[in-house]
Image (cartoon, rainbow, N blue to C red):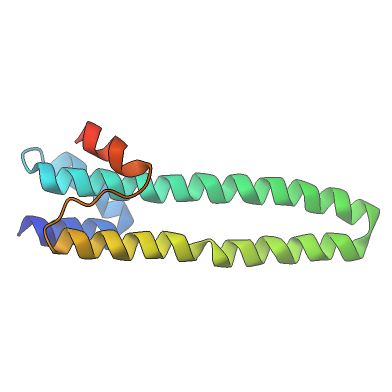
Length: 118
């Protein structure tokens, strides 16, 4: 399979990026995009979980004070979880397109790490 198609698949199917890291030892292009995809997905989940934990604590505290404030924060948690998908999907779609085009475009923060580790 072509390297650009393999890199594209690594972005679309996030867990497959982990497999590609171990399978593609010689193709630096595929390894870079697989690492970048994996770091992008892991970073997203770490940030989302941290934000949800903080908001859950705030929601629990506010629920004990006032049920209206607590309900507002719990609704805010759901809204943030839904909105948080936008940058993740935007980054994945952009990087997948660039990978398919044969470009080694770096995503913010994780691109430098992926380049160093690939």
